[in-house]
Image 1 (cartoon, rainbow over the protein chains, first blue to last red):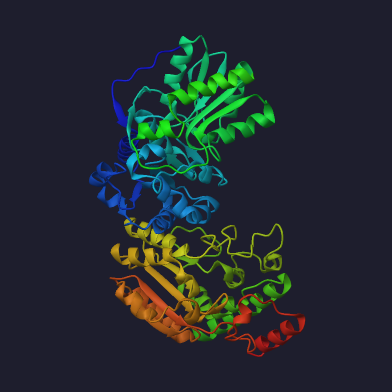
Image 2: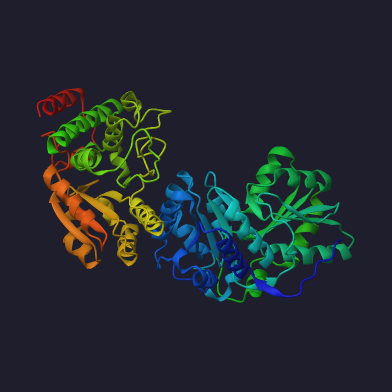
Length: 317
Length: 269
């Protein structure tokens, strides 16, 4: 299989901050809103460079989403920034009525998603946000895998028209994608080709899946790994092409099994091409305090879990 | 000035009554309580063009109490934003006139229904106008009951912080919400002092007196420092004596006999 390396670990939220600054320089219509988490969202550089285009909303997320919807008049492109649970669950009704139903060009950017938030614990570790957002008609849902890709996704959102949810995280993780790799919303990224099993991973689990592929290769198993950075709209064509070849599937994500990427893929396959599927995801549980690595192990979303899911699905093939 | 807006308000009331009766719908009480406010806004205050509803320089009006949409739909149809015949489709399958305010109808700025949403959006529009040096004003009409929603108070904090002197909120203070008196469900008094302490310019009026309504908008527009709120004291079900100040008419739809009786009263006004 293709070898993946990285020179440094970086947090995906910093990729968002860098991307936001970049599009802020290019397009005067880009505005940013924050709910008193400027530093955590890495929006400080944008605030410093464009103070007149940065809107501090205070710890008042419902109002922030409404203000963003209102700001879309005259071609402005608002990017809201706060933690993922305050970006989704807390303001679901605001997003549903004033953004999604009203088809406002608001970009909801969410950091600290999932268990890798770590020590802050269950109240902040939202594992339901992808499901909440993908259910909304017309909402685009993106979950990039590393710093470079989060930056590229943020940049891509400037040209994208319509409501979108961009999910990223807190910890420093391997930055392995090439900064020059083009990023296209809705287009799956084939990382390595293989013949025995298709692995569809998103977000932080993409690197874990790479590690799993290397372990499995040593055992003589050929994995095809595809990064599904856009969960909605789903790249059905790429997924089906891979599964028609391998005839079994493993999905991997830092999210509840209910409502996540695995759900979307199972729905597609049950209709178009039913094959055995195993899902690496959190199984109907809230998180707790701990280091990201401890939590990923405890909740079954680490490299060994991807390996064993592949071994299991191959037995069912 | 007032004579034409008074005649306009009567036309709105009749259209509201017909829509609610024919669709066997709810919320006539809250539509009638805000009718005079709408009549003055749409006949005297708002800078809007029915032939060009998306004109960038238009004033923006957002109805936050989306359940009272019959009043807004009637005002828009009577002003020529769409054909009056469309009102007959209100609440029917396939109609653009959903039974909560819908943005697919020309002249409607925002879909509302779930409460406490429009004031934050109005803040965003007002902020965009200031940043772009646009002269238009943003108006947002809220119910009293929906001030229970915390999102409104987030926006009420936000607007003075961002010096939104181009934002005018109007509270249709009819003192009755879904299932009880505002005082009994979640008391708002003293509402004027609440807004004042949040640094708003507060104007309190009789929400059925067209001269007072007109003057209030003038005062609100003249304040160059703060966002303004017009607390309009109103009567739920205003214009039909058996509906006035009655909780029942938040949800009840009139019978044929009640419809005829109400229409007769409105025709004689």
